[in-house]
Image (cartoon, rainbow, N blue to C red; front, side, top):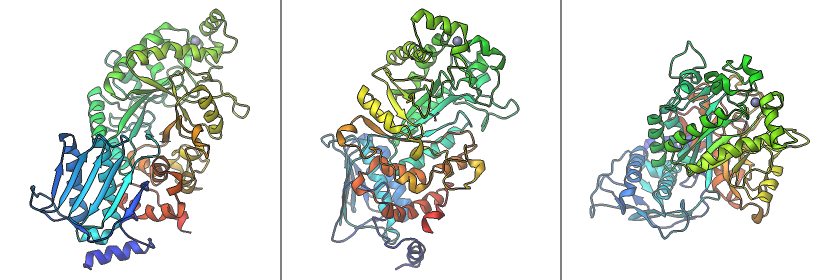
Length: 536
Ligand code: ACM
Ligand code: ZN
C-alpha cells in the first residue's frame, strides 16, 4: 500500500465503517452486482473509444475524471492498451438508462442517449471516489451496474431574481448537481426584487428592473441580468451535461420589478407604491389591462426562443388578489362583465389569456399549485387548472391535497413539498441565521432523506408524478457560497429520492455514502454544511 493510499485510507476509515468501491455511490443505483476476478487497470495507454460523435464531450469528461482520480492522462490509441468503451445503444429502454460494466480488460458504459452515458461516467467517478486505494493504484474493481431513474424529472431551483448570480456561478452550480444526476435547473428569473433576463423589445425591464440597488455594480448580488447570448451559452453548457434549463417568469404576483419599469401595468389604486423595489409589497399586474397581455405575449416569445426546454414556468403563486384585483375598478368591472362571483375566477381569466402564448410557441406551462383550504385560505389560482398545465406542489402540509386534485384532474405533478424540498429553510436549529430566509421550519438532512416522492401511495396513484424539485429561494442567499451551503448536503438526499427506488434507500447507508461525497465537494471548492448532528 502506497503511503498516499494509506493516508487516505486512514482518513476515510475514521468516518466510514466499510470503505470500498460502492461506498460513494450516490444516488444509489437501482441495480449493482459486484463482480469477481481481477481489477481493470488504467494506464497511460488505456484507450477511450466512442461509437458516436455525440459522445465526444462524454469522452473528454471521462479523461478529465481519470486524470483527477488516478493522476494519469490516458492517450492510448486502438489496439494499444485496456479499453474504456462509450456506446450509444438506442435499443436500450429509457432515456437515462445506462449500463456500466467493469471487467479485467474492458470497461463498457452504454446508454440509450449521450446523457445516459454521461450518467454512467458520473457513476464511474463515484466508484473511483469510494475506493481511494484502488483508484490511487489506477485500478477499478469489477462490477455490473444497470441503472435508470425512478423519476424522469429531477430538478433544483435557483433564484437569481432575489440576489443575482453571475453566469460563472450558475455553471459552478451545474457542475455540482450533475454529480448527483439532477437533470433540470429551474431558473426563477423574475420576482419583486429583480428582472434578470434581457428582453430586447423592452429594455426597460432590465434597465430598471435589474437594479435593485442603484449604487451597486452589475455583477450582483442586487443588480445584474443575463443577456440572451449568456443564457444561450448557459443552456449549451447545461445541455452538454444532460441538464435542461426551465425558465420561470413569475406572474401575476411577484412582479414589483416589472411594475418599477412599467407602473401603468398595476391596478390603478396601487400606483403610489409601485416603485418600491427590493421588497415584496404585494403588488400585482392588473388583470383588466390589455397592455399586460401584450407585454407578456412578447416576453414569452423571446424567452421561448432562448430556452429549448418544452416547459416554461409562469409562477401563479401567492397572488394577493384581494388587495389588488378585488379593490381595482377595472378588475371588478371585468368580473362583472364575465359574470364571475369570486375574484379567484379572474386568475382563470388571466392565465386563460396568457397560456395560449405559451402554446403558440410550442411550449407547456408549469405553475405552482395553489389550493383553497381551511388551513390555508389561499386566494390565487384554484382548481380546475387548464388541463395541459403541469403543477408543482410546494405549500407546507398541502401536498396530499395537491396529489389528490392533480390525480383527479389529470395534471402532471412535480413534487417540491415545503416539508422536504425547501432548501431555504434552516438545516438545524440555529443554522447560520444570515443564510436563512426564514428561521423555521427546520428541514434537517434526515428529514429531507425521509422524503418519498410517491408519499407511499399505490403505484396507480403515482403515474402522474413527473419527479422532484429542491427549491432554493434567494431572499437571504447573497452569493454562490451561501447557495451551495444551503443546498449541500440536503440536495444529496433529494437526489436519491428522485433517482432511487424506495426498496434501495436506507438512511444508514446514505449516511455512510455521504462522507466521501462531502469531502469530494469540499475538495472542489464547494461550501457545504457539515451535518454534525448525524454523527452524534
Ligand atoms: C413559493 O414558494 N412561493 C412557490
Ligand atoms: Zn386591476
